[in-house]
Length: 118
Image 1 (cartoon, helix red, strand yellow):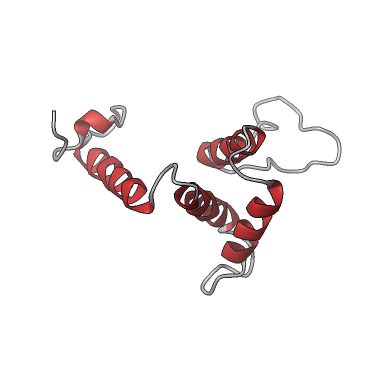
Image 2 (cartoon, rainbow, N blue to C red; image 1 turned 60 degrees about the horizontal axis):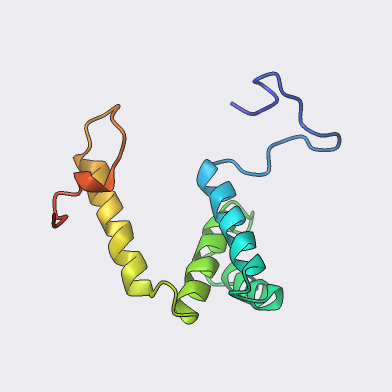
């Protein structure tokens, strides 16, 4: 359900929400915040995102734009030594295992990962 359908009109000239999923807005906000903290220049960001958008296998209709955004952010974080790709991959796998181990209707918590060491 869009904001418009909930009774909150969108600003003039905007027909649809910019983000279709909450994680997209979070990735966007995180990128802006990290840039503002000086982790990377906007030029570095633009070049990294551009490379992802132009990569083989990317949807021509732009439907995977925020997937490209997330991959670009992960690559910059790895290049800056903030979050090495191996660490990101391990954490993503842990969240996947937690999601599969969580009963339907319950919140997905990293603590639900059956391989998590206590």
